[in-house]
Length: 635
Ligand code: MYA
Image 1 (cartoon, rainbow, N blue to C red):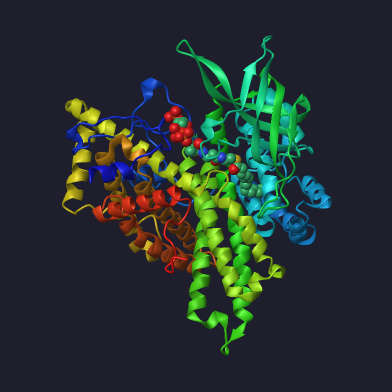
Image 2: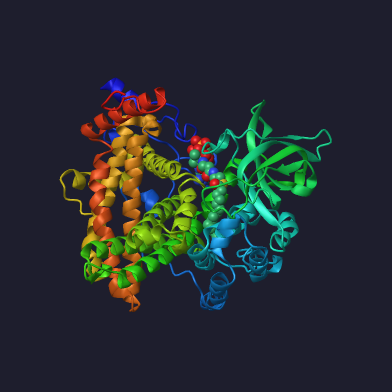
């Protein structure tokens, strides 16, 4: 069993630098090993390490704490003026996509028509969040989400051209630029020059910290000389201004070490070239190329966010933009659902319209639940960001994972409902499905992001367990903490703990799922503590249980989000309230119904035997270059 466990949790792990060993004393209930400091977006000074507070629902979920601040009530992020502005902006953008942009032609030609691009620049679509005084529209995240939703409903290839430009291409300048960098570059990227984000390399995909591109200070100290190459860069062939990540030598404790630095690089600096456009499965009209840097002189004033801080700069750019993908894919799902619904309402088979069959009704219902939940996440995260939330990175990652998985299912089911017609190019759904495939891969693969969610939460919970350990070393000074924790544990141990009182947070119709949610929140805390007790710091290697934990967290957070949104709809008396309450209840039933089994699968002996079996099977497949077993004929 011991060797089986080692095998299950062996191998190079994802976050070796993030979860150091930190044995905990048995006074905390026998916890022997745990994660330490929380994964702060901003690095914490050494002396401040330890437990930190957070208003994030998801981070607190890992501790078994129900934290409503960022979920209940649903964030109201638009002022009257901002709402008015959106009311003026959305119709022309809708009209543009209906009347000017031709997604089928863009896909066929593998490029966006010139007239479309010119029109998008004219509309201001390339500078949605840049302050007006620097040439943009100055939109909030919530306003941006609404416009991006329109783009996602019509043409994901165009969406990527827009998104690669502003969601990641120049977002670093917006977030971390000095006043000089902002006033020099933001008017240019809103005035017709494309931007790109250059991180990925041939040998560095998910493992973003392992990039090889290097930048070394010139002897006169005026420039960094940049050398290396990047692959799969969206807008790589058309961008004039790029955010480029490279290793730079840094002096640390008397030694020279490499750390990642972010740079603003102009093609005009010289030594920058691009490969031919890649031939892709989908989002064909967006430009994707390799980008090469050969002795490119980058002025020292073009360092973005400080020398050596590039990894954090990259992660924060990605964190900041991920909700945009959820917004775009909420639009995609809404459009696919419309096509499926129209077909189901008119197509007659066996003497009945498809929509009259309960099997088809269930399909439409499940598609609607996925769309509703994706949309809820997009606006919850953007609303949290706009109302000043600091910790939204885990929720943003969840929104990306959930949106891209859901959009794939919804469009696939739309094709299924349309049957043979759905398979024909004319309906456009096959293009959307091809376009969608990459969304589960780029901007952090869903597999990596699930582990990111699980490990970030475990670090947070681990820091609180450590605090408890410290409290037990000096109990008289920490009586409050010890008594509240002791009470919580005692109630949990005898099955009395019911969780937070959620009755005031939700509409009466949703009280039962909200109570179940509160109870399951505590179950997450027990599960995480159990994982830490069992595996200690080796938990980072245990990808199979971590994946189940992430799935449980996603089900729980998405349920909280839809309960909140539907409650808002009911309290505002919206015409859609009855349907929203039903959608939320249906999603909660499905999602919360899965959670106990997912959490149990992080600890059950049977589940662990299966992980071990699966690991062995996968190892054999890899070692044999495919399926090792012959067909039954052995021929
Ligand atoms: S762009 C390319 C996208 N590439 C990726 O996303 C790379 C994925 N890899 C990673 O994210 C990281 O390497 C992982 C970390 C997560 C695997 N926030 O030891 P570590 C901190 C804040 O865990 P690793 C593309 O696809 C961490 O706390 N901090 O690191 C184009 C620690 O800090 P400290 C973070 O094991 C798509 C330190 O870093 C985060 O190496 C086009 C080291 O951590 C984080 N997230 O692995 C899209 N992660 O030392 C277009 C780590 O202080 C947009 N840390 O403890 C489309 C938009 C939609 C359409 C719009 C239409 C308009």
